[in-house]
Image (tube, rainbow, N blue to C red; front, side):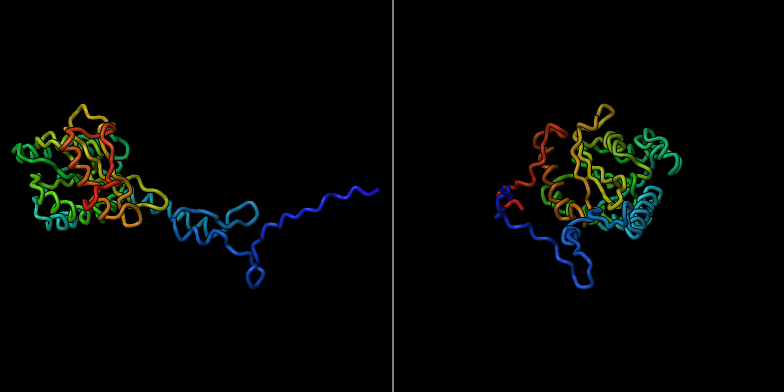
Length: 271
């Protein structure tokens, strides 16, 4: 007597059909339109195909170049000069780009001449100071600082905020904004800075907001808006988040982990 298996009525899963020429369809093609991430890379046996390998090497080279690229201060000074605020240029305590990469601590400190410049501008009547620092990607602030500030500054002025001069910093880290705000006697600092380059984002800018910055300030005392660029958080969204957070910081008199960004749930008509 034969023991045949019971019939299986479950239909077989559909299989991708080859396109003309006998090549299997690329099931990742649609997803690649939604992200710059490297997904579904072509392979040849156990190895990646030549094209994605070369693309990754090019992206890595661009990221390395972004770290070493120098800020075009003259161009940035001209760009920011059209925003209607005085613009000052200072430097951190490092000597050059290589020194900056080797000594992060000195990137948080002002050079002596910069301290004198800032102290001479202190008047105690400013609510917020915007610091534009090259950080690890000068290209990021070169391209994105002005478009964001061009939306933020008019909004704050319409709400009677008193704005300190814009400060451009060579070879600066995030915390150098604390020293700048302390010298100017300003209660809130916003540091716009080039973020560490990635393989798909060599030009990403971050905005770090801090209430009552000083030597005792920790990273947990800051709020951050990251990945500001057209392919990430766009200029309009970044400006909206930034002004929303500034209002919250001034209202609650705090920043950092105790203050959450709820700008994604705006009140009706706020946007």
